[in-house]
Length: 426
Ligand code: CA
Figure 1 (spheres, rainbow, N blue to C red):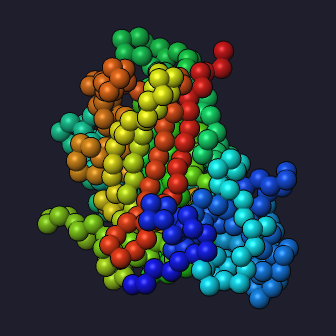
Figure 2: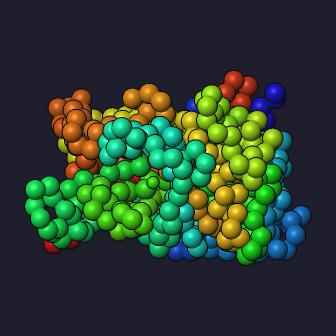
């Protein structure tokens, strides 16, 4: 495969995560206005400037209008062909042979203020990693870790869209009802077991109609792209409130997403067969089974979690990696999640976020949250500088990173999804 080159030198560096083959969408602040942008090398291509300076004149008016909006929702709502047309027009501007070498179209990524790229109408969080579900289940039900519905139903819960924030936003330690062991009544207090969850999310482009399920083989038409998601969780609040209706305030205080949305087109080379189900597992029910989904429904996205404590930052020490996994280990594919979510006629709206659930792999080094790593606090984690953690402390910063790579293809990055913990309000 010939790798296309850009006139922006940094975009051709094999170490960049933002070559011409990526071109993820985001929103940034420029002169007090929200501008749509595309990451390229260490720069951002300003899509509003592309319109204003006449570089998008070949695009239909509805797409030029979409590039002038304060969020990606309008572009997303126009479907996959629309976002592909804008991405390809950007690719032409940025390609090595382009006549449009105009620096007015670019701003440096360093120092740019990235904003929430999408107004998210609804947020659903799945539980698609069987490794996570089994490890967590074992903590609560040692003899029967995986509930009997798991291999039939993509389990999920309705999250709260109003508390989704962009990477870099500080996270205030929440207070809530905690039931301490050996005390008869709960107290209202700051959580003592604040956790992160390493997740990937996909954002809905073209919506679906109320009452009409999205068939599994048409799921791709409704997926705009992927981002990183940190589903912050207060484990003590969660364990007291979760029965019988699932997580509520333990999750809804904050969810962080990465600023760049990597399109389905950019991820095409990294599609892989869905997880091969072990012998004896039931096959998916017909509405969750598709030939294309079986052969290329999963995504080999490498995902990492780093922890940067206050003490490490003060000593100028780098963050410590806590986990490395791949999205390919999920039991359910994104298309299965979307087909299931709409199977009762529930409509999707442009910008809806569907997250994977904690991404954990089979190895101990691939456990995607502290609940798994410290076994609910029973096995504290000693960090290289001697600090000890069961759960997150005030001042801790959690950094999620993700990328795709394979021989013959440029590496593509999701960038980072960061958040640091502020003390509880007094
Ligand atoms: Ca989650």
